[in-house]
Amino acid sequence: MVRGRIGGDGAPFNLGEASVSRAAVRLASGEVGFGYVLGRDGEKARLIALCDALIQSGDLASEIEQKVVAPLRQERETARGQKAAETAATRVDFYTLVRGEG
Image (cartoon, rainbow, N blue to C red; front, side):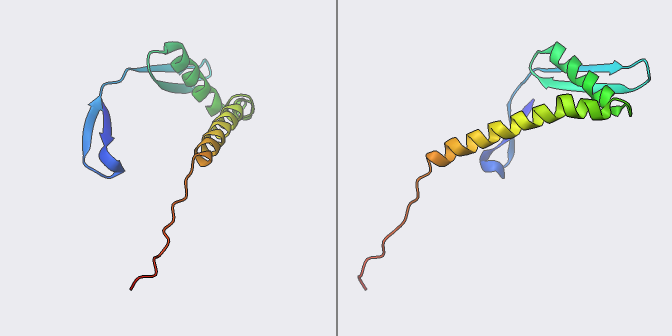
């Protein structure tokens, strides 16, 4: 069940149901990884669980960080920057002129 709040600080309410895919993997070296994805993409959940397990490995942690996590982080920051630029382009500054009465 997905929860929501009116205005961000109002009383919580049930917004609706959502599907979640989850996966757990255990590597031959013993590391266990878990992955959760909103929706029904089981393969994506498995890949996330695999990355979670591999990043726990001392040998592969830096490689996973460089080849998987860093590009995803960069993609997210680029998308946020683009969204902020699009939002800023539609910004309207309102001001009030004070009348000389009174």
